[in-house]
Image 1 (tube, rainbow, N blue to C red):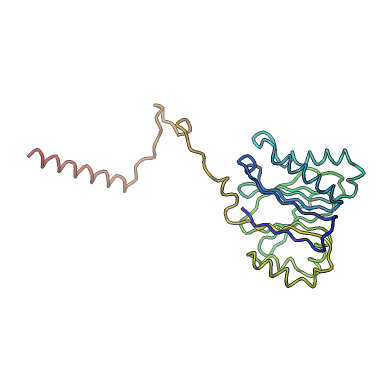
Image 2: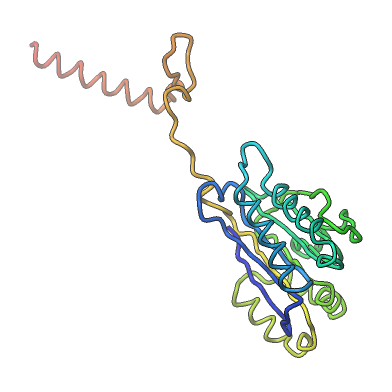
Length: 254
């Protein structure tokens, strides 16, 4: 699981964040979905709806849910070229156990904070693309922080060196205090961001093991489930029990 925080600075209809959590067993296989964009609200809503619809309706056993969502969004953009002109949009999903996938249109920043290090995860994606290119993916670690930021917010964070401060924060209380203390710096901003902190055991419901049927057990040549050999402690206990049984039998006989 991960803790997620959304912040909007001087919110208006040209910025938006969308965070989706899985509700069903099938959706849990797809993961969590985070979207951020800059465009007219109706366009942002439409693109977010297309990605979310494809992501959570895809059959994860035969197709990649993230790619399905991006394909639906690209179809919408192709069918509405005038409305979609100049959009900025970032899409990122977190999947069990620590996998991340991302794609974007335009100049939206997608950062990974790991300790004191800051990585631009979206660096390999083209900013000038009019639709979502192929996504990139990587592996996360517990306590990693993921940041999705619109450009103006990112520029202020760089100028004021706020990323360095934010990277050391661990709790919801610390993050709230951080933004409260930086209110004077951020009050002139217009934009938004999403922060996700990867916890120790993300998506615990994913990790539940299915009950094994007889066919799933390791088999010996005779078709019976094979068991590991008894250890020294187990052999000692068995020998002791046999000794007790023999003593009882001897007592009863004689």
